[in-house]
Image (cartoon, rainbow, N blue to C red):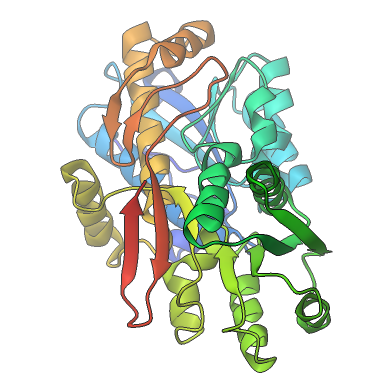
Length: 382
């Protein structure tokens, strides 16, 4: 069986512990090149690296089964580090040097928003899997995603806070990056439309590690709840620890974006995040497609994904969706691939059922997510 080529030495070091570049006995005419841009380093690597592992696993499975139309996939993986400049450079390399017709990514909103104009100007298909910024909706005719927009799920988060938790006033702390800012803006609009009030907003830079002065200001504001929206788990861990240090942990309803209420944050704060709730894309690990993917991931990498399962499942599904598109089109001609994706309805994958709207956005199942006081992880589909 011919081997898949991964054309980035960095990925080899991260995933195999080896130096050098993996190679295979695949001649150019036999391969379908697909680009992949994800945060392999930096704070977003906590979900960017598992996403890459899932895509690599999918490509290996497809190649082992004969490839696509008898051709092997050459997955070319680039580190975007959730940085607009690096993602731009990676996209230009993939398009102009590697001659790809499809880019999977970014795997964070900052990457995806940087890639979109390049992909659309060059008529290259972009398929983003961990991107919820509402701004991506208008990115262009060649840009698709299989993660819902923050407008789609932040409305339900605001609705739950207002109608179920009885929250009427909120203080916001958010990181000045595309994803956390988009969650804040979408939540704030929905919450105010319901009759709630955003009392104070604290925007912080990514290199800040001390939230105490901001939290003390919030303690004087008289709010019912705090929404914390960060780019990665490390900031959320610091936030909960500092809330506890200031004796504020039990004084407010704690609202989070999807990375602020996950297993890693709960574990590394020794349960300080218990009760903090979020709403986000929901994937049921008991679904047979999801369970199969998770078992295969565990077998290959000797651990379960160390991030939200949806992030991994959606990245895995992306390659299989592109496979179906290429097979339907008898090749990777971009206009045909684009039209195929617009026509997709109720496609079943590891992340659930996928359909696309006229903007290339996906509508998916959502779930309320939190950890209770006993440490049990709760997902309630809504």
